[in-house]
Length: 253
Image (cartoon, rainbow, N blue to C red; front, side, top):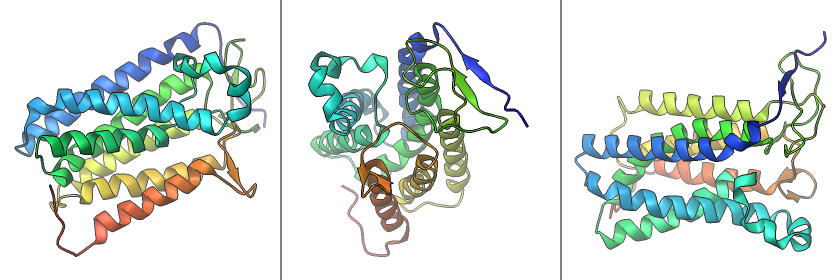
């Protein structure tokens, strides 16, 4: 069976920033909604969003640069050109989390309830933001002959051109949407602080580790077997499992 190729042509790469901005705004709006429902200080969402945005951009770009050092040593000015693609979600997530914790502690806010507010927003933002990756051609998949293969035709695309590829960006969109739906369902019967974030981390990690096997862009490797981002995702799964299963008395602030 010949693959049905979906061609992504001129101008699509220029929508990358639009989708990233849309993902951020949607995540902020959903976090504010969750904060109001949980009786938290929703007026802090704007400050929280600012620090998360700073951490997300810097952290995701930094990790991308660190796993592609040879290229950026030759093209140092491109380190700042994040709008051309090249953001690693996990790197941004780590730094954004650190800055968010610092900000919330400064305002003496409970950390775990806020984490549960942010969890569905992260999944929603991921689902929207990955459309930007699809537009730019970053995070591209390995070659395949499946019926749903996609091919990129824009010369500015970061993906290989005129080659049928796994639509890993679409896999990530579906993963984010599924995670979002799972969290909304879990909220109905999970009330202990921190466990919703645990659900997010575990579901995200399982999808991320799996999808990585179908990707072909370089993400660093360990022993030529697993990628650096898979190791980080595995650590995220461990943290999520602890948040979900731990029976110890947890401090929420």
